[in-house]
Length: 348
Image (cartoon, rainbow, N blue to C red; front, side, top):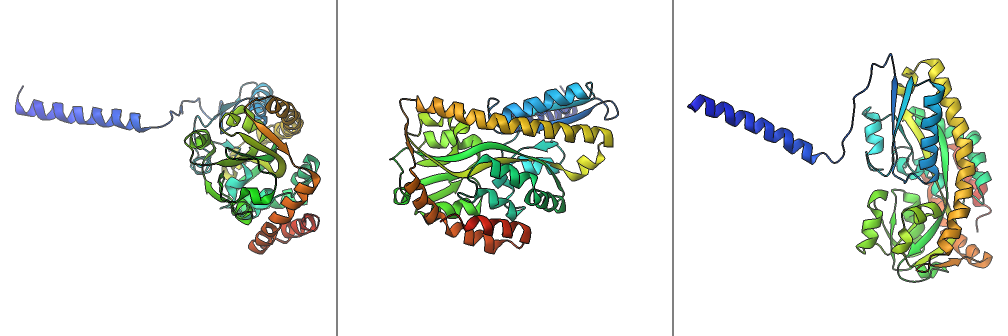
């Protein structure tokens, strides 16, 4: 082999090595093969929870209904369990156009739309009906306007349920029991304030990393819904659970506004109508699943559950109350501020 041949061989080898190296460094494989947009609309819809959760089941139902109603002209590709992106990657990938619909926990938009943190306020809602009234009423519409100002389209708000406290150290019955424990949280100043008010530490971590972090002892506790605790088997790592219902966990169903506006009007109407139908179904499903899966958790021999009494819950509400003052002073939107002030009056 002459010198020129050797150089060419080395160049080809280097290119081949680079291609293999790049492929091996890609954490998730994304298939972008699709037919012409004139023939079929592809909607990629990733989420981070399991398939057998309210969000997972609703995403699947949305896919099935849309594909049936469109006669195959719209394909919805659902990616559960963070199989495509983590919950902290989804928003960025949505803006890049790599995905078309996301369903992040409401707190994930706190840095973009601070007002969205009202969903994180402890004991803001007494029941699911109050959540639905907010989502379908003036506050929900106002949130929609705030999303559009940032280039997004808020399509719906889906339920998961009310949050409970779990930890590996001791029963948590009164606010003083939180002191000195470290909790995993999502990125929300309201939630960080909540734990700070009861003397606990907190750190932000993506949901898909939570189980391993608990297994490694990086956190003593976390807050989550019954379905997430049950489906992700967090009870195998967390010996104690407090049935506190202290906060709400829901999801913003969001798309990029430019993408949404580019869809033909009749197709967009079909998608919107389907989302309305699925949202009603998802709400009923979430309530039923919370009841069923709580019964399953109660049967787990390794998990000790304490249900807060009315007096204990009153003490928790009083301890968390200053989170409202911090939130109200941090926003300028009068529609949302007035709503929170009215709710604040009944919290202590």
